[in-house]
Image (tube, rainbow over all chains, first blue to last red; front, top):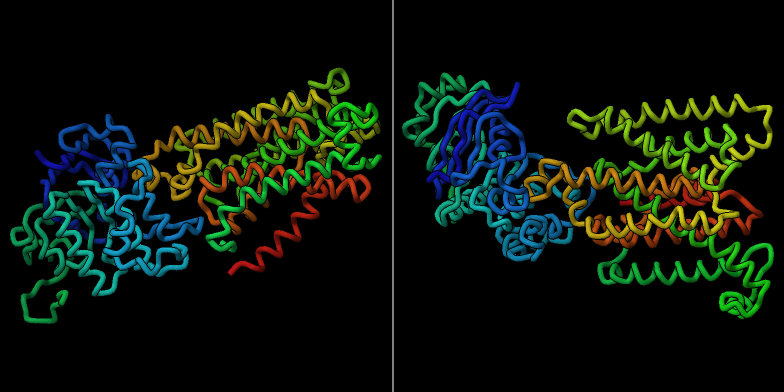
Length: 237
Length: 326
């Protein structure tokens, strides 16, 4: 059974009917030009944007699952969150435990894993965009949700933290989670288990990167030419 | 936050002590100043004059003041989380405006002099009608912007109604004075009937008490709150009803007292941080203390109306605090 089954889900003006099944224990990249519907698809998958069609988590219709239970099943990381009130970093990360009775479990570990221990008492409004993204990722981590939906988690991160977040995603997938995240770096997408390509608010292709990310598709969807040449690659020491 | 973390947990006990001190001061002071011993004797009924002053005049005023302060400040806190906006307050949705219009019409029509219950009733009906109108106007989607804009439009309309009634009764000096006094807000000459009218504020506060954590999440926005497990439709409905009822009851017994719902949550948030689990109890107690303090200042200044004092004291203090912000 798939972790997530989307059948003909559509949002008026934002997403044409999309059908998609995402397997458990995999790391999936969501790519597409600006305005292709990536954020919309993530929100539909997270159950926070009403869509026509059907979304099912492990065979259960999303609409029939109460909110508290949904939060234990799927975690969503928004892109560029805005905080009206200056909560501390620790307090934002603990929000991920709301659906578990606010037990603070795993908060310290998540702070450490995203290199936030030193910032724990800082207000989220006094952080850089990249630091704030890491706070939201830490919050998603403490939910222990098997479905992780991240909206451009790498966009604001420096190379080191970007690689660490990728490694974290891989660890989660290896432990059985389904991690779906949007990104713009097609070279990173090439290294993932699966890719989903959106174009003009519709599903263009989905499958393994080697099958999908062909020079023809890249030219068609992104209007870029792909070359395979030796260049600079980065890795964690 | 300004307070160091180790002092934050002392904020509630400190405010409770402050509230107790202010309450004792309120019982002692007035046209006839009572000594602590005489105040005690009056409370126990051992001194008939002091007893009459305390139980017939000062105690109802004290209780009404505390309830009004707690209601207005917590309504402000709720609205700020609801609208994700620091500046939201009970005046914003048109709820206060509705209450004022309802009361003014009641006075102008002459019903207010028929029974003590009619004026508060008019205020409550006005406030609830305004709230209902805002909700209906903004029903489809009911986004924050729509609600805010509906509130602004409604406030303008209700202000016009109030002004119209005022200009229509320029000949009736007594009624106009009554209306003006009411529009300025105050807690003098309150009776036990007023206390009864305001008592449901305690129920509303009790319902609000456990919602603090969910208010934290709601302040992140509806999608984030939902993704973290909050049934936002239900919560938003509860909060809207609670803030309306709190504002309506406060307006019904004390008139249009401004600024409390804006300044009290703000000061407390600056002091102890933005977490609502902490802020809800602090706002209830702090609001009560703020209104009692302002009423005492007004009395000491020779009978200044409460609504004037809250703005006169609150305004400069608020500006000073804003300057202290990093």
